[in-house]
Length: 153
Image 1: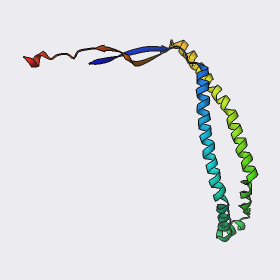
Image 2 (image 1 turned 60 degrees about the vertical axis):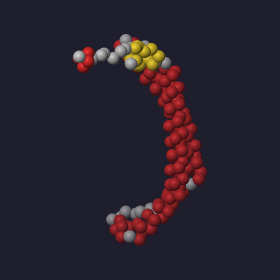
Image 3 (image 1 turned 90 degrees about the vertical axis):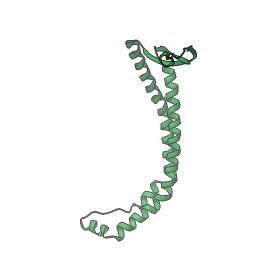
Image 4 (image 1 turned 60 degrees about the horizontal axis):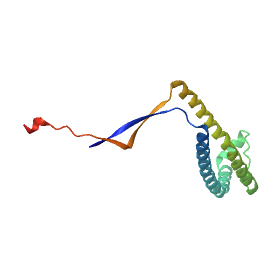
């Protein structure tokens, strides 16, 4: 029976540039997924929102809620103009501004992660390192199982 040898290594530092690269890649992947999900959500809302607003206007206007609120001096504006806020020019501009802002934030995000790696390195230097234990699959020791002599007697 072969038993693997447990190796011990001590981590003395972590490369800040490596942390920067990994954080940048992770941020960009998550950012791209968020852009795709936001585009799907925007297309769904663009199709559903005008009908939803018209139904809400009809509900408020035809029910007693509209007349009850007008008794108390509350004027309900016609919110069908809200659908023009989600018009083509404004929504495309908002999407472009959001994408550019998100891409510009990716570098500070990665820089913050690299800063935390630097702080982690300072803590490692103060404490003497982090011991990492792993099993080396290449070096093995052969051992024999003990023989139970009491059973044979």
